[in-house]
Length: 334
Image (tube, rainbow, N blue to C red; front, side, top):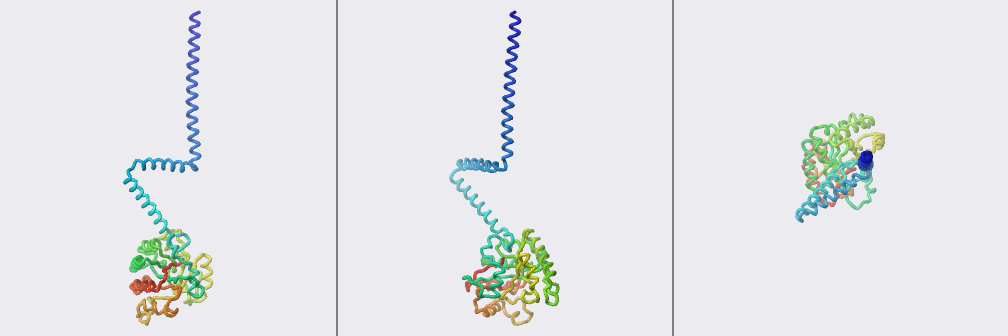
C-alpha cells in the first residue's frame, strides 16, 4: 500500500512539475508575442512617429550632452550651430528660383520684363518713385571678358542681366560663368542659339518657326550649365525687336511659353559701325548722350552692352559710378 501511495504521490509531483513548466513556457511565449506585436505596431506607425520619436530622443541626448559641457564648450557649440544655420540660409538664397531668371535672393531687385518693356516704350506708364537702371549684357558668356564683368559688378555690389547665346553656352568655359551669374544674384536670359539674322528674319521678316527652334536650342544649351529645371522667361531678340518686321506672331508664340522680350533705351555704342562717330566716342560719353535725349535722367533705363566687347567692359566702373551719382537703383529683369 505504501508503495502504491509513494507511486501516486510521485505521479502527482510529476504532474505539478509539468504544469509549472507548461505555465512558464506559456508565460514566456505570451511575453515575447507581446514584444513582437509591439515592435510590429511601431513599424506600422514609423511613418508618423519614428521621426518625432527619434527627434525627441536626439533632443534629450543633445540636452544631456550640453549639460555635461563647460560654459566655454557650450559657447563653441552654439557658435557652430549658428554658423551651420547661416550656411544653410546662404545656400537657400543662391538657389535658382524656378520659373524666373534668377536665384531666390535676387527677387528683391528683380522686375517683370513685361512691365519694364512697357515703361521704356511708354515712360508715362511708370509711376514708381525710384529711378531704375537695368545693366544688360548680350552675346556672352565670353571666355575673355565675362569673368571681369562679374568681378566689377561684385566689387560695386550691383547686379545685371545677361542675355546668353546658345552656341557660346556650349563652350567649356560657360558652365562656371553661368553658375556664377545665378549664384551672385544676376539674371540669365535667352538670346537665341546662333544669333543669325538671315535665319531668324529672312528678308527682315520674322520667321516664327525658326525663332522658336532657336529659342529651344538656346535654352537646352543653358540647361547644360544650370540644370533641367532652369526655365527663364526673358528674351532679347538679336538686333532688337524694333529692327525687324512682322514680329507679332513670334511674340504671341513666345508668350504662350511665358517668354517675353525686351529692347533697350540707352546703349554704350560698343556695336556701332567701325569708324563711326559713336564707335570712336567713348562708352560713357555715348551713354550720357542717350540720357540727354530723355532730359538727362529718365525714370527707367535699360542699358545695352556686350560682355564680348572691351569697350563696355573697360568703361563699366565709370558707368556704374555715373548711375550711382544720379541716384539710380540697379535692378535685373525677370
